Length: 192
Image 1: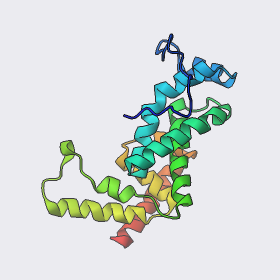
Image 2 (image 1 turned 90 degrees about the vertical axis):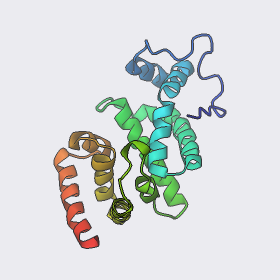
Image 3 (image 1 turned 180 degrees about the vertical axis):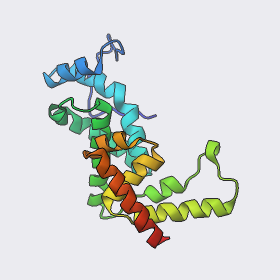
């Protein structure tokens, strides 16, 4: 995975490097207090997660690289808003997905989730072309769902998250995720 920290020189002390022995909570507290090296360690530790999340949602590697860089820069000020009520990675996932959405809105286009989900990984390859075509049609229909329904479907079915995990990322109750999924199923019946 690319590690492009060109815009953030000297954030990780080369003598110390990223230290897995220090907890995220400690690094977050130190970063919030203005300690650059703690912030650098936090970014270094979670950069691959940010990049993978951006890749999944943006589709194109070049877009994901730009988004990951933007998230790392935004993180310098956004970390002050992390209140610890959710896991840091859940909060970071939400920040990254919001950055993807911002980029997509700025470009005036819808997300490219369809392309991402239509691609079949070698370990889960569909046995025949009909199934691949059907999967592509389903994800094309998912892409036409309202944003909250689409997000619930992607988090639960594509990302294989529980309703509770999806609720944490979406910033809503578990029952709301279930309702969005129910509404998505009804909408998909009409679209397919």
